[in-house]
Length: 352
Ligand SMILES: Nc1ncnc2c1ncn2[C@@H]1O[C@H](COP(=O)(O)OP(=O)(O)OP(=O)(O)O)[C@@H](O)[C@H]1O
Ligand SMILES: [Mg+2]
Image (cartoon, rainbow, N blue to C red; front, side, top):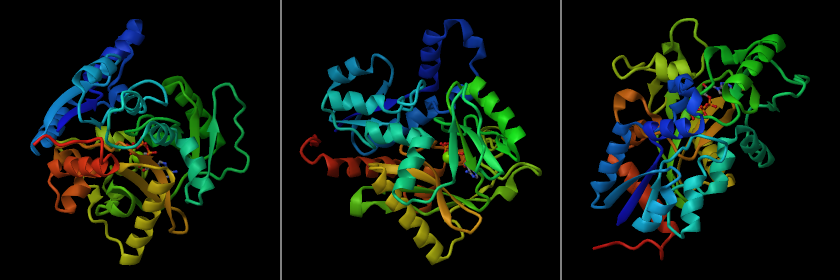
């Protein structure tokens, strides 16, 4: 097949940022581009897809992508593009594909927008009886009302990923700390803030590939926070993800498969399957799960375009789960393509 790989490279995001804010480039920090793909990841994904005999064309998901896609007319668009601005930034590629009638991998624009906005996503989960932490959304300029909320809580920008805006100091013990952190977050991330009850139990992340009855839940990854520097909050913060954990000195905080009884594993699997269905996700996803004070698994948040860093020392959880299932890195992409093909039986044709 002729496959277009749609990505948002760190370099491409920097260019986009420069176009929008020509005067403030020096303020652009590494954190701003944390969700962008590195050149090494893009190369590894291209090679992985090509290793199954496909003709792969990499496309930066920028303003010119629609024209380039039209010209290329691929059989399938493999979408890993995260975008940079706004809470619909992950939806652009699927929307363009739908406009051009091109089949694409992964979830559609509505599901991607929903999952990026942590508050809207939790409302849908709650309406469907899926357990998640109590929360409140705060918008800049509004009165900060904490009535009915129990501390400790965690403060997060409402629509980010890769732990952007989530630091040790994001866990707050009282209203005073919450006010300080919320105001700081407004200033830095220019978007509403979500305040969630802090779930104190063990944390897991669960990768899955497929659709419907063929949805395969990969071995569950457990996080061992005792490996964090002493005194650090027991969260997978920006510091834990990008500062303390480096390929040169990787932190051994993951266990895969996580040490769970068959009953615990079964409960978590059924939770993520229901969540996949309720959010109308497609082809693949990775969900963070954490136990509440009663030991009950709650959905923390949902990543319909999961991180897929190729180097095992970079501790990317989707590839880690795939390896534990016995799948090589390249097989992840082949399986996602197969899942997408079952949804577009007439639209994707193989070249012999
Ligand atoms: N309500 C909560 N209770 C306890 N810990 C939390 C809560 N919300 C977030 N955390 C901690 O903060 C981490 C990052 O939060 P979250 O997963 O929402 O961020 P993200 O940037 O969307 O992550 P990803 O990199 O998976 O996209 C979680 O892995 C968890 O350790
Ligand atoms: Mg997360």
